[in-house]
Image (tube, rainbow, N blue to C red; front, side, top):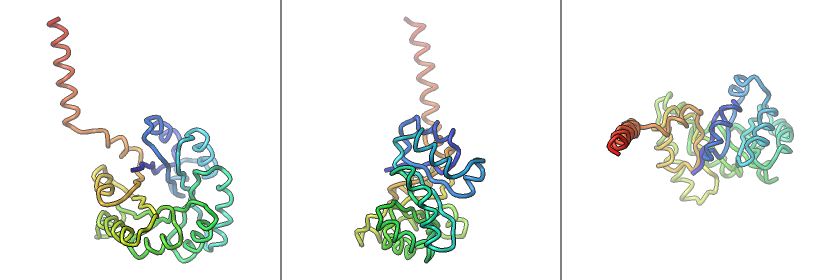
Length: 218
């Protein structure tokens, strides 16, 4: 079970990383734009300041496989944790096959069907990223997609990992792990909500009151 953060905000990543529970980071052009920095700078900082991360996804944006591979060369020298993120398109999977054959970790993103996930695995993807929230927005279950991909991978003995993305709440996180995702990526706000439960809060309040009462008795 691995937890990735879906953000390019380095300060937020550092805060969560300090818990010892964060394994990786995913980014996309929108998140990079919000950060006010470049993808290269964000990835470089993360690898230096969060050295135990096993994966930092750097998304390439181009029309052809050759262009994607050329962009990937910008990020590969930064470190072993670099994972090149490509779209599930014909050109994206061409790039995935070439990069994976070279030993480069690849995350195939924008997965919305089992067929796409199977093609990505065939191309050597390290991770496939089904988009849970976007599936739900379009009236089909993202959780069920995770389960279907997991079943197909199990039958075919695929080593590609399911990296569930586009998560909107803690419930999504729990269900994705239950139905076969080995990794989930989430906004920092959802990570912090995973700690919270009303009964935990109530229990702590009661323990505090009882402790204070016991102290007075002593």
